[in-house]
Amino acid sequence: MTEPALPRTRPDLDALPPYVPGRTVPGAVKLASNETTAGPLPSVARAIADAAATANRYPDSGAAALTARLAARAGVLPENVAVGCGSVSLCQQLVQATCDPGDEVVFAWRSFEAYPIVTQVALASPVPVPLDADDAHDLDAMAAAVTDRTRVVFVCNPNNPTGTFVGAQAIEEFLAKIPPHVVVALDEAYIEYARPGDGRTDLPRAADPALPDAAVPDSLAIARRHPNVIVLRTFSKAYGLAGVRVGYGIGHTSLIGALRKVFVPFSVSTLAQAAAVACLDAEEELLERTEAVVAERARMAAALTDAGYRVAPSAANFLWLPLGARSAEYADRSADAQVIIRPYGDDGVRITVGTPEENDAFLAFATGAEALRIAGV
Ligand SMILES: *Cc1c(COP(=O)(O)O)cnc(C)c1O
Image 1 (cartoon, rainbow, N blue to C red):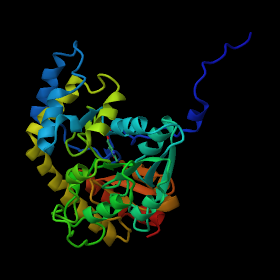
Image 2: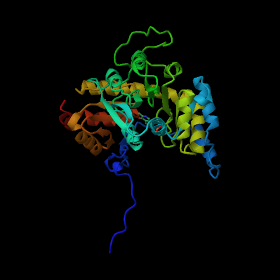
Image 3: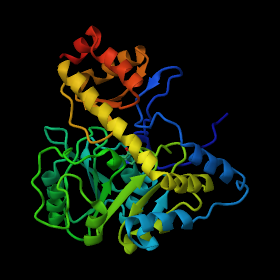
Image 4: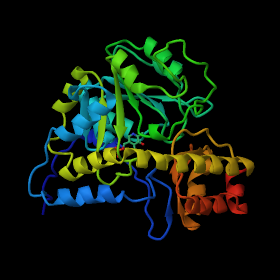
């Protein structure tokens, strides 16, 4: 009997690496996905429960209430705001909305795993630019990688998975080198964890008075001055809604309009919209929580440095240990010790900063003889 022919799919998809999510192991401490450990605030859980009562109706595809709130908060018009099913969806929409087949998308590497995937899904060509010796964006090399075919440059700031951060002045100098028709996406999924002074070097105060702080870029002001800049943010990280799926972009109306054209209709649910609005109502309380993470980040980095590790300076809710070829074994032994961290090929491991107890569990492993031996410190 002959087998029926299989449905034909794009052969190039066979070569596409799948997105690898952080592992979840029942009973283990999960420090692998940069989530917040605390669940949603009661007010946010209530908003989700209330929204569930209207689950028989389609969501407002334009997310009018949430869009209006985000616009008012950023001092822009609703036409400058696009809401998406997580900001990873906005990354994909951005490439779809700007690239013809063969056009180029520039990003640092390592950086967010989704960039090469969304690029190739859109039949565009990924142009990864190696991080510098400090695990930070090499913005000069990225600017030099821009060609006539470049449509988008992703700048992940702070960078996932290394946590490194580029300051306002470096961003401005970079933008001055980028042709105005090339879109620069400032992916700020972790910006709520960045603090003045987190920049890799102690940057001098910017000469431009529009930049009040040289260390933490005012990306919304930058986007107002540069129509080719779009700022991508998410409710998944500091706002604690990773399971609900909502993010947003802020930029010029022409870009935002194009993103909306390629939006999958209704892909931001009523529950997600209600949860995001409730988070904005409780924003002070949620952002206050980031202080504890920032303090724990410093404590963990100090303990690891004291133990002999090289720790990349982090402006995010995670730490990066550049362990090279030892990364996979290190992460496996950590999992054996009931702490799930995230290995990245032969580059390093990323550890999310959790609660003090969770972090202590990782530090107990990391400062033990076996971990130190594997890490070679
Ligand atoms: C987590 C993350 C996002 C967004 O995630 P969503 O859950 O899709 O909003 C975007 N960029 C980076 C770099 C991230 O790490």
